[in-house]
Amino acid sequence: MKQTKHILIALALVLVATSLKAQTLGEYKVNFDNFGIKPKKNAPKKVYINSFNVMVEVYREDVDYKAKREFRGKGRAEAKASAALGLKGVDTNLLQQETDKLYSEFINELKTNGFEILDAAVAKNTDYHNKSKEFNGPIVRESANPGMLEIVPTDFRGFTSEKNASGKKSNKNGLFPGMKGLGKLAKNTNMLSKQLDDAIVIDVNLALTWSKTGGSWLKGLAGANAKIETNLALGSKDVSAPKKKGLRFKGAEEYFTIPNDFTVAQGSGMKKVTWKGYLKKPIYINGVLDNVKVESENKGEIAKTYDVGNLYRVTEWNSTISSNAKFVEVNGEKFAEALYLSGKTFMDEQLEYLFEKYK
Image 1: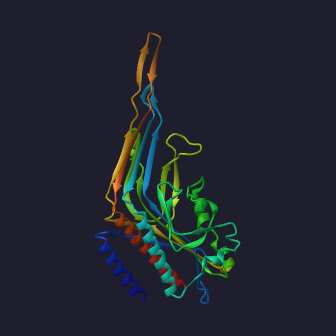
Image 2 (image 1 turned 45 degrees about the vertical axis):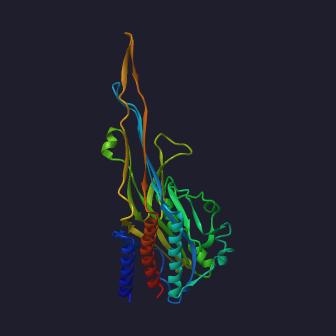
Image 3 (image 1 turned 135 degrees about the vertical axis):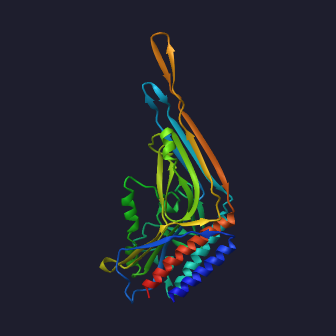
């Protein structure tokens, strides 16, 4: 049965890939981290979808800074290089449609396999969501994560924090990003499950990104070097952006971890069921976005020394800034379909694992 399902999935993906005119997926690897026990045979098969978020990258900036390099009055002045790369032709309506399709197929698969979907209203009066705000689709908006669009399915109904509801919540890494990641992994939706009579609580994050930032270390020895390249993929991604608020030094950047995972929680205490499914290796997508690179280099101006009379010399250090921005034209339909194809592949793997657990 399992083998037959794999064959059917493979055939479906071949048909979709053919329709997308050479749009193909690369190899990928799915991992599952289990933090609880296996579900009992008589475990409730009621499901509450706590979140279903999609992030799509559309713009990226990179910056590099080199301080003044001086040796015995000679050298180069400080230099800053910046580069920017964005997409033209992204169709937000199509992205919403494909997100809706992913969500509806996800819900239908659960129902077909004997799971009952709980309405959002059941969570409204739980202690877990007592300070939450209603959060309903459809939503396509600029994310608080720089360069990203945030998309919520049309049929999604749920609750979230006031900060997230207003679009101000980001995945910015703090002083201890590892600790933050641990906290997110165990964000205690088991508490919500307990308050919903041990229902299965599912949180889904999908991330379609394409930027590869960071200049060459060799060129960086000579001066400031900023670079962005395209590499379309589905999967968790650390992205950087120039810091524009608060206390900052020259060339400062902030880092954000965009998640791509499928988290399941049921029950609590010693009987809790908890696992997280994720891509150990991203799903790279070919045939959608051209390979493009934008790069900016700045070595800094050479110091100029002048004799002033016979008494002393003056050295002039002129700081320089270079910038380079570019936009890549993308087929909006193929880009949206790339989200669906890669997202569908990831979701099918997660659901198969879920169904195996609850046989």
